[in-house]
Image (cartoon, rainbow, N blue to C red; front, side):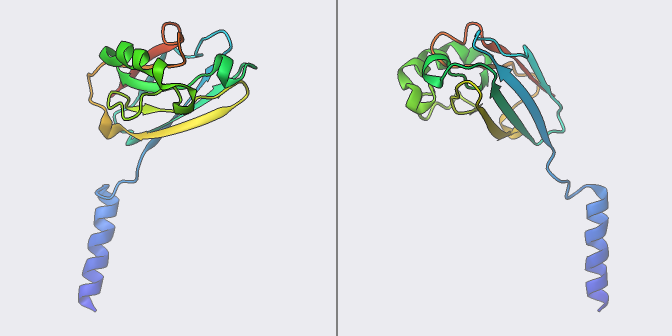
Amino acid sequence: MKTIRIVACLSLAFAASGAFAADNVCKVDIAGTDQMQFDKKEISVAADCTEVEVTLKHTGKQPAQVMGHNWVLAKTADVAGVSSDAMSAGLPNDYIKKGDARVLAHTKMIGGGQTTTVKFATSLLKKGEAYSFFCTFPGHSTMMKGVFKFG
């Protein structure tokens, strides 16, 4: 009986100290328009976030085949290469090259009036690294882009 009480007390002490801290999911909403614009140019996520959940809403009316949008995260140095390779991937692959390790996270490609969400672990990110978010629909990444800050 004493052993059970000791274990229970130790468990409570660890929980109170934060040793078993719960996940901290940080949520971000962003919108894309038929004018090839995101409504945010910068997204900042705190260092204590363990996961990020990004919800993209396409506020336009055009279908995905004509004016589709996705939200893609990569190191800033990789944006041009990811965007270039995405063109040949096609709409069925959300304009993301299969197996592209440079892509840290991405949503599916959506059309006007649709919403999509992606959740990813911040363990993929390093403080001080330069990250960008962008849309990989052909031709969109030059206008639909922003800075993603972590930490």
